[in-house]
Amino acid sequence: MIDEESRLNLADDQPLVEEFLADFGGELLQRSEDANDAVYWLTVHPRNVPADSYVARIAWTRYPDAAPSVKFADGVGGSLSVVKAWPQCKGYRPNDFDICKPFTAEGFSVHPEWGTGIHAWPTTGNPFLFVVSQIQDDLNHSYQGRAQ
Image 1 (tube, rainbow, N blue to C red):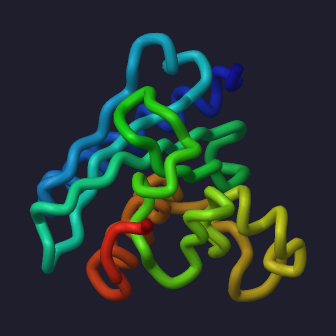
Image 2 (cartoon, rainbow, N blue to C red; image 1 turned 180 degrees about the vertical axis):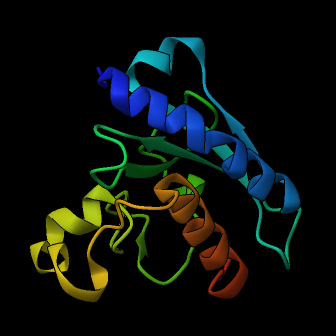
């Protein structure tokens, strides 16, 4: 369960995330059963292959203080362990069900050295938008199709 300050901070930053996703044909959702856990589901599409659709789950533990867990699912509220639910992009590891990049809790877990320097987690601005824009940027620039 997430603390009240994190919940309020997420609520403040959420509108810009929704606007950003809408610009790329995506959508941000939060199921009522996920509200206390600060779990968001989003649909995203590669710019060059808009028919390809992915569902990402972003789960926050402290906001804006820590990077979220980011996983892909076979649908909103669906399984997080389906390889075909993942896009193939640089740093995305569908067979390990994680993204090894400095915008995910999984990436920081594998690379503790990212805790400082140029890869340090940004706690100012809108980190929620930062995460979502990183996912969209990866889909727009390094997308290689659906994982098999």
